Amino acid sequence: MPGMTFKKNLPLLIHILGWSFFGSVIFLISPLAAGVERPDEFWIKQGLMFAILVATFYFNFFYLIPKLLFENKTSLFVGLNMLGGIVYVAIFILYDDWTNMSELMHKAFRPDVPYKPRGRNYSYDMFNFLIFILAVGISTSIAVVQKWQSDEKVRLELQQQQINSELSYLKAQINPHFFFNTLNNIYALTNIDVEKAKTALLKLSRMMRYVLYETEKNQTLLTKENEFIKDFIELMKLRLTGKVKLDLQIPEKIEEAEIAPMLLLPFIENCFKHGISSQKESNILISLSREKNYLVLHTENTIFKSTENTPEGSASGIGMTNTIRRLDLLYPGKYTLDIDQENAENQFRITLKLNLS
Image 1 (tube, rainbow, N blue to C red):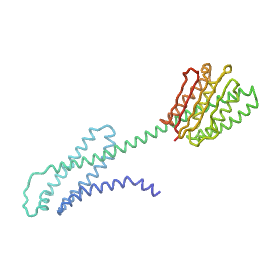
Image 2 (cartoon, rainbow, N blue to C red; image 1 turned 135 degrees about the vertical axis):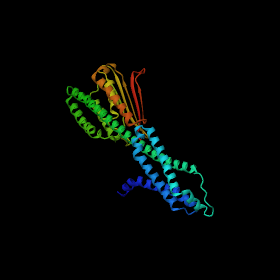
Image 3 (cartoon, rainbow, N blue to C red; image 1 turned 90 degrees about the horizontal axis):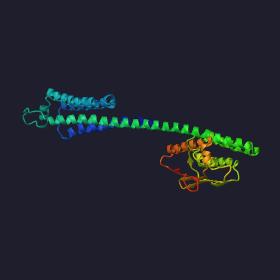
């Protein structure tokens, strides 16, 4: 709590210290450095000048800048501050005339020399005008920087909210898509082998726990994602025939890291949707490995054009598009995805290299 209180009061402390330093140097130390005792009227003038500058700073900061500058009334803002500077100088010209400041200062610096009235030195008034403009400029700079920081914070918060909303939407699309295909697989098994269907249901229940609890998080453990993928592949293997040659290179154990849940599934799902034919020989390769801070997924499957016009084929396109969008949102600049679907071997190949650091 004391730390939070200090952090809360830090801006006020900075203002107090800043004004103390500015006021001391300009209005106190500089005159005292001359080593001459000055009249009380001079010190009253110094105090008034300092008070007006402080008032100008905060009036500008809290009222003129928000009401005029930030509302695109720049000409009025500049005009009022220029007018304020002229009035500021005029006040102290009148004050000097009223108090005979020139004569008082002459007696302080040259007490043995008779005073002779001379014309006013307007270079001193110009200096005071520049000091006034400096106070306005500093307050404007601080206000503009603070507004930029505030706007940037709001922009980043809105951007993060948009990303979170989009990710939630994308995950909501992927999950029903996955279960739709898995239930279709189990339904097909019930007409072929009831025991295999029961096994599939047990695996599906374990996978459902993963989906229900892990996809609610932004990140999950790589080991859990790896086990989920292996369960999914085992489920798919239950419906494969002897015409499918399946080459799996998935480690039993993998070095721990964090990853977005169900990020890899659509790439693996794609192999079983487009790489299997009931009449022709087909090949599927799925490889997953860790290379230092990188996770590398490589898949290959034979392309069967006939599956592209099926409902599953259309859904696969949605799942792949959504996954690429998730990669863009969650891992910007931290992944490479190579897709090769035009080759002499009639293979669909995907290589995803993901930086997990």
